[in-house]
Image 1 (cartoon, helix red, strand yellow):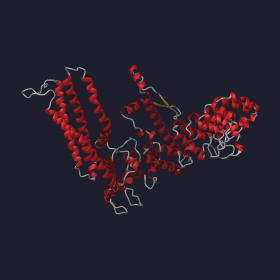
Image 2 (image 1 turned 135 degrees about the horizontal axis):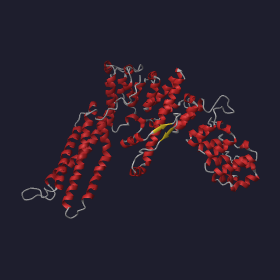
Image 3 (image 1 turned 45 degrees about the horizontal axis):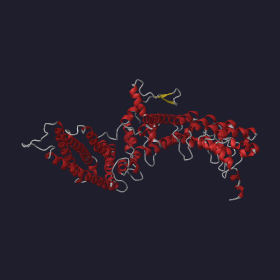
Image 4 (image 1 turned 60 degrees about the vertical axis):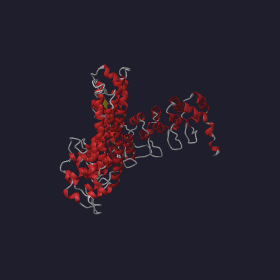
Length: 607
């Protein structure tokens, strides 16, 4: 390395002082040589001010340094840049140092609009690095004017404006995004550096819409109790965190323990509300331009993205704003066919809210492959949608459900229509799903075999226990404890264990001897597996009860306190089975007997 960098070592005391917020140790050095205050002292040309600002801790050092630089008449050197072309304000925006940003802006306010060599203004950097406080401050002090050296450009227009709004949304600052849109409505029309609009970025975030939530029963109940209130401007959202105004003190005490969970639900509802406001606001701005190209491109590109991510609320709002957008070309398909291809049932369900347009949407044919909607439904789902369902068998069931659903909406002649390869939809389905069918068959067999072994063992134990009752028999053959309540509990639970385990064995044997045709995965096999798993769970629970009642019966004269520990011990294997197998059982029941995934999900009608 050249000797020209030796200053890096000699200036180390200043570097360390800036890192440690130790102004006193270098104040005299700066008095002797004021030029050191604005000198580039590191290998990457960073000044003491840049180093101190970058720590986001050395606030006193920054304050004193700025004060002394101004005092010695070197104010114009406050914004000396580093090797990468970033000045101290850029660093403050990157690290979220709002305190330093205020000091710097107070000295030269137009620096908020000066970009670095990569075109990034402090405003954009604050959004990019997720520094909300700094971003909100910079928005207040950055007017809608072009930077001094770039006439005709502005931080709120063009790519810079597109980057600002999309990065703000990506960072999750939806309330700030609403403020930006209120101040600069045209920003929603701009494309960012990746060619995306604000509406497209929202389409990529299904988790901030109501349908993207994964709340359980109690979560949804608490969600419904959290009130939302809009301000007069309609863009600021305030949460009234009073879930039960007349609740008892005991309830509030219990609520404190659950506060993190409730706060999470509260945040989910805030985001849901803000996302709806954002989409509604953007759609109104777009349509108010009365420009077909703008509406077609912005709304169309947004629904293209939304179909992939399943953000049906955004698609619905776009269609309500401009009904004709359903004919936008989404990756070679129209909206309905794209929803079938991507297996997005929430988007497809919009067909239930359509008027007569559903007829035209369902009869479209892909000109390139001569395939209708049923051909598309017959193809294998994208991996990320297929893996949303547990197990190959249930994945096969979901694929069959899609095929049957689409079959309802197409013309009868389309069911036997041939594509360019001369295949009907059913032929396409068989060819596309042969590997999944084999995986489903193996999954069913493996599950059935494992459960059959357990059920058979329970049958053996329950049968033997019926003839070797606790305490033995009297000379007349009657059980010794036949008049005891615990004995009756033993007999009943043993009988339930025997009958339910026998049922379970029969169901699993029925699975093992099945023909495993395509249609069997729709109803027959899931039904047998559901009954088998439920019977197995009942037999395990009954076996534990029988065992506990036997011990309580035999030991009650010697150990009177045995009942309570036995109840706890008995519940352990039952709870473990529930934790490990009940999710699968619930999914089986929901997919086979529950409400169909295809239904009208919103009373609002679209055309």
